[in-house]
Image (cartoon, rainbow, N blue to C red):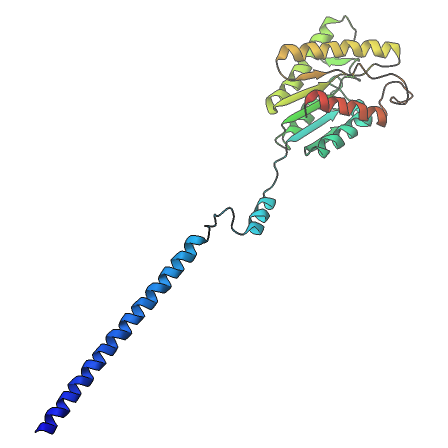
Length: 259
């Protein structure tokens, strides 16, 4: 009987020890987990937050590099005065500044002989090729000649009012189209010419263009009266501009237009 009581007491004592051991294990695990959590929080608090702009700088820079640069579009048009010397230098200078340039020139053309070449039609076609912010024009060197009026030739003359009226209508149509389709229009005046008669004629046209442009309230007239008539900046004909002269004029145009 005593032995049975002793055995029961021992079993009870073992069960109590087992319970105490379980409690100790649970308590130890709790404190271990708590200490780990505190350690992690302290690590997070000491590490600065990384913003989206700071994360992965290589990827961010690559993304920026892939963004296309928007370039302003420029249309350059004219006759042989723009074709040789001035036009190529102007195109090169603008492209070096980041402009996208469309370039079209045709010698022996103007606003009079539409049967030979129609600038009204061609300008409409060129303007439809892009969203041009700027148009630079140099025309007029071939326009002091007859034009067709009511099926007949109307001869040019500095004092022939009907001729100038008809020419004015053609200019208004052409220039008005440029103004309506672009933000800025620059008309380049003709430089001094060595042949005296031709020089006087081109002065009349320059004055006509300047007056029309100023009264229209659209665009800007850019004179080139500073250019010498002689070599090395002019051809031997005293009319067209050499490459070195063209570079000089192009630099002045870019400066005067603010491009």
